[in-house]
Image 1: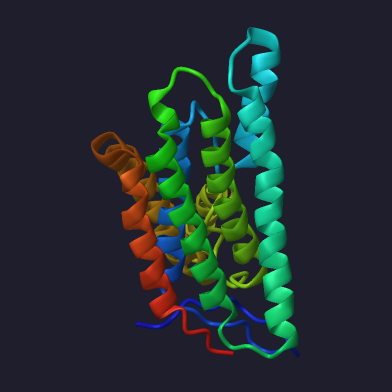
Image 2: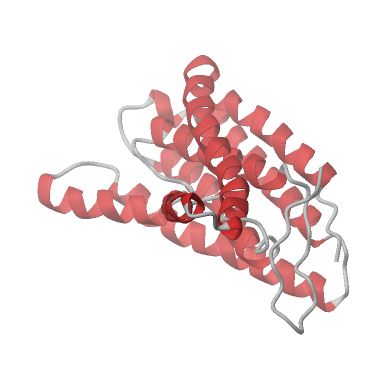
Length: 236
């Protein structure tokens, strides 16, 4: 099976090519952790800053708890993005061919820390949003910030894997164009649908796994990252 490629601008080098399972598996990871965190950590979005801002705004009007947790998740997310930026820049300057693998390995380590924090502190068993929830939530947001940064810096030739709104919008637009015989639109649909499907599977899987296993449910998605590290052979 051919790896997904992004069309290169004329006169430039071709964009990096990646294994076709990279996008759907990364989307699965993002949705899985975001859903798990939302259920376990009092409505915290670990992967989506937008969702937390909406919930904070709603809390100002209707009241609610967990605002400190949601506020502090933002700087943790930012630090995760900066980690991706600094790591990508450092390795790029040294001509490394393993940038994607190293960034995915860092994410796996951070998700392991997220799992351990949840299993040790068990903030989901408390009735408040205290320090244990903040530590656990910030660790999850850090990992997801890293994945978001990695997606923009090292995996830009893939379709977006952490936010599906733009993907679904593009699919709808392309479906209309594909009806008129637009081959480019059909090819883009073929590339975007697996990521959306992976995200849906991850969201459902994260919810069911958390209900069954608690924070131990983070461990299977770390295994998915190990698979991604194995298949992340960037051909430049």
